[in-house]
Image (cartoon, rainbow, N blue to C red; front, side, top):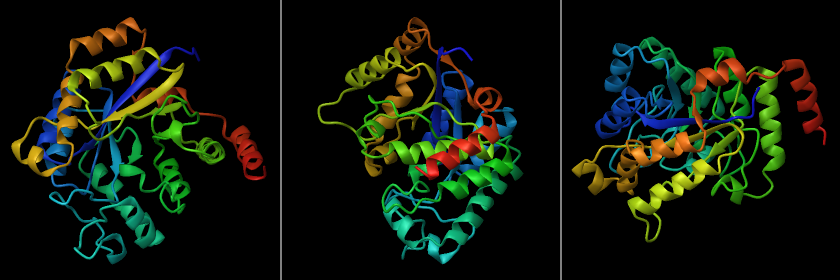
Length: 305
């Protein structure tokens, strides 16, 4: 496979709310982004799912959602297991609370229920990822990533993970001692037949001190020109401007900026000028699968190091 720079731009949180749905629908219809992942538990799911089916979208994935982080916008699990909820009866606000409180069997049943709801809605699921990284064990070390990958292998789908750490990434590049866990997880994905991208690239979710739309745009364009060879995914959370959201949801301005950015001709020019090919997870499915037997030997090697 050529080492051309290829980029997936995925819109997380499809189905979260009307303003999120409006932005994501527009970007998908205009071909400004690669794909989206839908939240089966969120209030705007029915609208997002119906639109996806009506438009015949083939680039809608599953955003496994175990947390409900906003005080003003809460939701519950599909299976209603008490260990999946806080004292208010909603999914946990934080990943740490989820990792400490959720029973493994209940989580697995919830994962299955969310998959089935999206599938029964008529969506041809293109890939799977995880809201807020709640299944990765980032807070307490209690990872359910192996169980998640096992489910995804049964569904015969690709997943959002990564096999390489881009040192310039503000999140992953700042973490210490993650090389071995990442190598183990990537080898497990390969062994289970779950295709994954080469890199996962992030940018700050919240507003930074002194940040403006223009400085935010320039930071993303700079990253486009420094994109590593291979297949990278980055994720955005676009939303149209909404008075209630701006008032009640922290850093909603950033979501409005993300929507504006991917409609901006300057970004379109940068992608073309930098020689970046926009792809979606169908490419990952068809081109990035690794030999499973060889991957199993690599996994054993990683586990016994």
